[in-house]
Image (cartoon, rainbow, N blue to C red):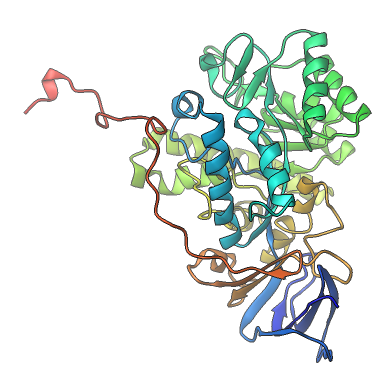
Length: 438
């Protein structure tokens, strides 16, 4: 007989946008059996008293780089994360931190050495404890580069990126990744070039090339996701048939129209920018960089809100995996930014981080909500999350994590030392000039 878990008297937030209510939740096996008042069952094997707590779907982070291990620069990411086996082992250790933060699912759209495919399979096989995971392989780039600019070579593989050239090269790489077992194909549609004139990032793919990616991937049943920071890139990705867009910042009317017409889900991923803008001084970030990132949020928020009002799904993703967004620390943060910058209610933000975010797992309608028949991915959080989403970040406030109907026991993390050569070595925080010697 399947194990049953009865969660009593919690304030249930269903993840579908409905108002919370005091109710019981019954889980049978790996599914939500019933949600209602005064539920009873003769064969319940475990009862959880959730009075004074919020019972809600586990968070789904639709933009998480689990293999990066929190680099502080592109140099560190591309040239110090060059050990495939070690990257896989460290990713397997880091993924447990997501569970402790209440994350029961995540999308890693591009990974070092494509270790995401192996990590996902290890999680699904029960070898490594971790949330539900969907993954891409290497992000597709052109020779014009990505956000790392001139660090990107004219051809070949570096870090998480694969540089592709002509049409045959694009088709070959998309098919290779699908054969490898990816859930998504990711394209770095924009990048940074030395003398660009555009706001945000420069579009480095043509519309025809983007259509070729989607046609090739869709023929084999795999969706396509694009990194887009700039109006034309958002417009062309929507027109090319992309299934999801990351960032979608600096949209103009044409870009907004294309996204609305195609109803392409967007993952704004403002957590990275918000952390730098709000807390950058604590890590000695320059005021100019802080203001640049603050401006990207401000200049993009109204268009994203208009897209949402026109029915475009907005999903929560945090870009966890960098030094500004370490694992297990900031997975709640995008909800806070949605409320503060996009005008979402807390219930709307929770929906964006749960039932809507299940799109990133390719499991929309299967998880991310507390309704009968869905997979039982549930967290119990002390306090009223509908009043304050930052409760999700408070130490010890996530009291229970249930994944696939199993109540997890998550030990505290062990201290670690970084392996030799894994981090960039710093002699100091500046350039030592004679005039500065006192």
